[in-house]
Image (tube, rainbow, N blue to C red):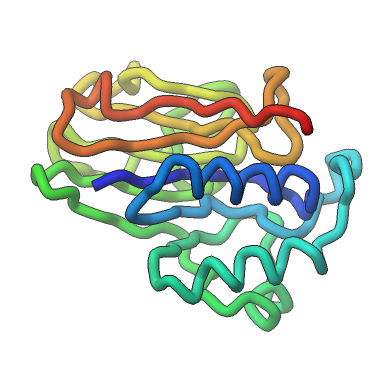
Length: 189
């Protein structure tokens, strides 16, 4: 199982287009969006080519494959669900990969691993699981300090990174957890 994981597009058509091309190149089985898809939020500057109306059809077209999952970020609202053709208002979703590892996907504003001033509210997860979250716009790929049997992965931000590079993540099952996740840096055109 190969999963692309993206967070915090924040309505950037420029970076959403690059994300979709990169996902196509990666040939993934699923895509998981970790929230903050369309709106930039009141604390953020406008991302490059802020055009949520251009992001909507990109994601809706991909959703037709049936391979898209999404969770709600702190910037999602009911109006987002009205224009997106896939559910996006759940606080989290879980997948169990083909090796039995639980992947807990969330935005990071309700549940989180406590990195970079994020919420420190780890859900009850089986040993060997991973919490996969966005929200901080900063990449993470390491054990949770307070629960070293749980892995934490943050793909960074597609639209408004706070660590210098636009990015998303890839998860590949069948590998040790420290090698199952990797970051992919999105390049400028």
